[in-house]
Structures are given as structure tokens and as C-alpha cells.
Length: 283
Image 1 (cartoon, one colour):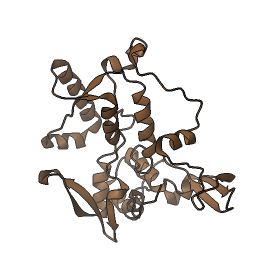
Image 2: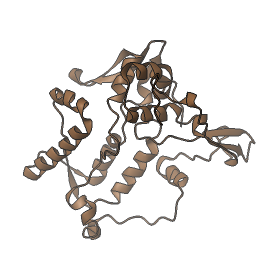
Image 3: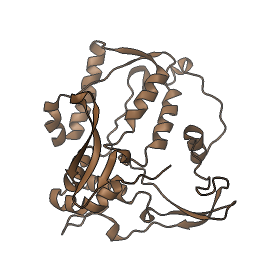
């Protein structure tokens, strides 16, 4: 997995304190920004490995696993696609997309939790009343949805430049046939907009209704796809099977395997975290 030249973590590192002091975000937003800022750094701890072929030493730092982090979604997405593929009933499915009028955006910003829950409730009522829609097989729908279920506000790949005052990134202009265009925002404004996409604590964005709900799991088990027989897998083995990436393979010689020689503890230095001036917040 190649490291991107520019990352969200760099933007938080460079503009985070000014953003926090200017906009005074709530503790949920602060925790998210701090998690993304220290993801896969020495602050998270990790382990040191030595290749059993070439002898080179490599340090791997732990991930934050935050659902808003662009570096932590690939394996989650692959796991979800496989899990839901083995859970659903073997039949064809309707794929329906609901959009929100632009005029409601201001309401969403005021109380995102209530807005999102109301949206789910409205969608459910609409589906019970009538049906819109494309007809597709389950595998196609799941793979398509997998590209959205674990998508964050912006991927690192879209960030093209970070300078002293601003961030340049690509976006799709849907008013112009979804053409990809480059735009630039002040760093603080970029973070303000990014934080608008942080979900409320405990909010569930993937929900199952009707015969797909847990309530009907036993009754519908006979209609589900037959699961392939697999032995017990570690998380690392499952990642390799689904993504083709072997986390233990030596990144230098590509032949040997990294053997752990030392565990690195987390660094809990106060300097690692964002806090508003004159305000103490437990992270």
C-alpha cells in the first residue's frame, strides 16, 4: 500500500490548531481530528519487524481505525462486502437512491443526528408505500454500495497540494457532467467543511430492515447463499485473501517476511493532541 504524497493528517497537523481556536468544535470532532492526525504515527505505537530474508528492519505503526479516516477504510470495506454477501438472501434486488434537497442542508448542519434518523425513517416509509427502480443481482449491488458505505469526506488521492495557507484538491462538478476539477480552499475552511461530514457518536449509517434484519435471520437462513468453507483466519490472512496485500511481506526485498522483534508503546504526549486555547478537554 503506497503512501500518498499529501494526506488529511498533514492538513490537520498544519491547520488544525488554528481551526480549533477559531471554530471551537465539540469534543466529538476534536477526538476525530486527533485520531486522524496521529494515525499510523509513533503516537499510536506499533511494532518493529526484521525481514527473515534480507535482514532489514521496518517499523509499522498502528492505525486509528476511525470510520472517518481515509487510511483505515480499505480492509473494512472488503470485510463488509464479504460479510453482507454471505448474509443476504439469494435473489435479485432493487437499487434505490434517495437524494436530499439542497435547501435542507442548513437543517442537517444544526442537528445532524436527528436529520439523518429522520431521513432513514422517511426512506423506510416511502419504500413501504411504493417502489422506483433498477433491478440488479445482489453481488453487483453490494460491490457498488461498498464503494459508498465506507467512503469518507475526501480521499487522500484527491488532495493535490498543501501550501502555507491553502489546500488544493479535485472534486466532481455534477452541474457540468460530473467533470473533475481542481479547486483551492484556505486550510481552516477546508477543515471546517471536512468536519461537517463527521457523523454523530454512535450513529449507525448501515441499517437492515424487513427480511434482512436480525429479527428474521433464522427464518431466512435457508434462502441465503451457501458460504464457502474456510478454516480459521487471522485478520492479516483475511486481508491478504480479499485485497492481495500481505502485511507480513517485506516491503524492501518482497521475498522474506517480517518477524516481530519489538513492540513499540503509544506516546501519550499532550503535544500530540489538538485543544482550544485556555480550555482543557479530555481526549
